Amino acid sequence: MEVLTVAQMKQVEKRAETEAGIPTLIMMENAGRAIFAAIATAASPAGKRIAVICGGGNNGGDGFVAARHLAAAGAAVTVWVAVPKEKLHGDAAVNYRILEHSPVPIRHIFKEADLDKLAHSLQSADFAIDCLLGTGIARKVEGIYRGIINALNGFDGRVVAADIPSGINADSGE
Image (cartoon, rainbow, N blue to C red; front, side, top):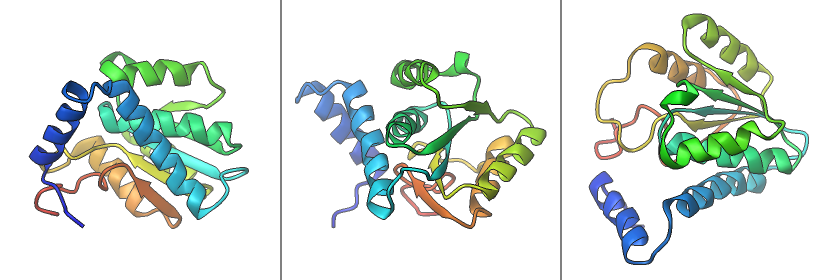
């Protein structure tokens, strides 16, 4: 298996868009469906309780797509978002707006009290999907994001991460 650096992966995605003509919205849909497929391979989503934790970038958008497909397959999905919807942009904002028109509850994690609600929600979840931070993170994670990652790390169930677990540097593994 060949492992790509962050820069190489960005080049692959850019070439898919510019040379193959694949819209980024389609790439996000495919990524979200792949997350759905990873869960569906492990267990039937029907009746499962799934917490999807999303940031404001493309990983968050992948999570919005996955949540929609999991809910359509009968899972009880709750989406947790770490940014106000006004800060979402591009394809992530498009998929958030689509999700708003679904029955999937959307919760926000902006302050410490919200972390307690997330931790409580995770106690009853069968799966957690980590779509908080992606391959672009190259700095130490602090504040509310550190708290969210700690909550995910304390989760006893299965965690599926989009791209890479949040807080891990994709080039160094640290």
